[in-house]
Length: 353
Ligand code: GDP
Image 1 (cartoon, rainbow, N blue to C red):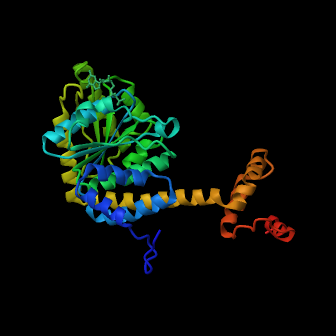
Image 2 (image 1 turned 90 degrees about the horizontal axis):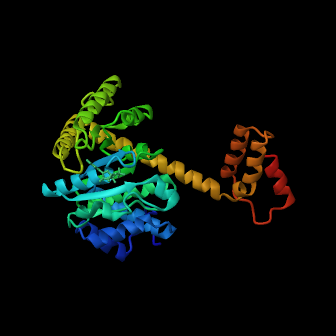
C-alpha cells in the first residue's frame, strides 16, 4: 500500500476515494462495500479501511447513537422494527447494527434472520446490517463501531445497535452509544435479574415491553424497576433513567420512548455531557484497540510462540508462579525475535537473561 511520505499514513487508492464519495453521497451499495472492506480481516484491507475511516471522520458525529439490549425473547427485534418504522415516518433515516457475542462463536446472528424485520427491510431509508460473524467479541464490536461511523457519514440520523443480554456485550455497546436502552418483560424476576447483573446501571432508559399482554403486570414491573433505580446513584446529575411501558407488537408507547430519547439528547447536549461521553468513549476505544493490538502482537512473537505451551504447563503444574511467568513472557516483547536457528549461546542467554 502506498504511504504518505511525510506522515507515513497509508494513501487512499482511487477506488477507495470513489467508495468514500459514494458513502457521502448516500449510495447504499457504496455503504455496503465500505462496511465489507472494514469487516475484512486482510491486513491490506484493514489499512485501506482505516485510511478511509480517518477521512470520513469529519462527516460523523451527527447521529443519535442508541444501544438496545435485553434478554432473548424480550422483543428487541420487534421493538427495533416498530421504532425504525416510526422514525422513518418522522422523515428520519435509520441504520440498524448488531453486536452479537453468540455470532462470534456459532456464526449465527441476532439480525441474521432478516424476516424478523420484514417491514423495516423494505424501507429505502433503513439500512440493516447483521453482526459480523467472525472474531472475538472485541473484534465484532470493533467492526460495529466502525460501521456505526460509516453509517453516520452516510447521513443516517439514528443508529440503533442491538445486542443480546449476554456476557460482556452490553458494556461494550453502552461504550459506543449516546444512550443505552434496556428492554424488560413485565414479569417479576426478569427485572431482578438485570438488577443483579448490574446491567440496570448501564441503562439510560428502560422499556417494559409486551405491556399489551398484561397491562397490570406491566404497571407493577414499571413500579418495581423505578423503585430499584431509585436506590442507585444516578450516573448523571441531569438525567434519571425513565421507565416506559410499551408494546412493540401494537406500537403503543413507541412515541413516548422516542420522546424520552430526544429529551435525553437535548439535556445531555446542553449540559455538555454528551460531548464528554463521546470524547471519553473515543479515548477508551483507543486503549481497547491498543490492548487488543498488544495481545495480538504478543501472541505472534516467535519467542512467545516457542515458549508459551511450556510456560503454561509450568504454571498449571505449580512449577512456576503466574506473575513470574507473565513477566518472563512479556519480556520477550522487548527483545528482538531470535534468528531462525539460534545458536547455543543465544539460547543460553535467553534462558538466563
Ligand atoms: P428478541 O429475541 O429480543 O429480539 O425478541 P423478538 O423481537 O424476536 O420477540 C420475541 C417474541 O415476542 C416474538 O414472537 C414477538 O412477536 C413477540 N413480541 C415482541 N414484542 C411483543 C409485544 O410487545 N407484545 C406481544 N404480545 N408480543 C411481542
